[in-house]
Amino acid sequence: MKKRLDEQREHWEKTFAENPDLFGAGPSEAGRLAADLIRAENRTEVLEFGGGQGRDALFLARNGFRVRVLDYSERAVEAIAAMARRLRLSGAVDALRHDLRDPLPFADESFDACYSHMLFCMALTTAELEFAFAEARRVLRPNGLHIYTVRTTEDPHCGAGIFRGEGMYEVDGFVVHFFGREKVARLAAGDEIVRFFEFEEGDLPRRLFFVAMRKSGIPGTSG
Image (cartoon, rainbow, N blue to C red; front, side):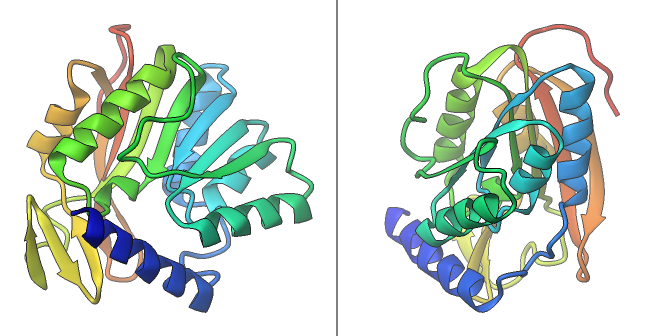
């Protein structure tokens, strides 16, 4: 699986180089909603997994958050840093290359929130996802939020292409890990799910889950 993920990194770097606005210049709807949820709790320190082309990280920084953003692609990290400098946001955005299969390079309870948009759909095994989620929980402060989106098993691409095991299919060179509700529940690992709903994005359209989990057991609202 490590070789496959390394191959995916090369594929994404080539794609980003050829399509600098692949996902659009503005923030994702998931990024907007995450900002609203984090702001409502007067939180400011955010760790983003899989920053890609930086649209959500830069949006968060423009809206008063301090963002550490990680990506497996060196090209993505360089692009985010360059855009942050150009927008005079370097003081609010710190981009680092990191492999989520490795421990996060941060101390316990360093962040108010973790966020990612479709990052966990990469070619990661369930065991690797469980490790990444445990690391996210470790670096969250008490009552912190872990907010993420993933493509669902109802997505039009699920079941298409080449089956790669554990809910993963390779379509047009990209390996996508599709999530069912049971996988969302498994990865919550006892944390409280405070928001969980399905939505659509893009022209296909992609079908996704939006999930927000709280590290502690403080009551939240679902739906």
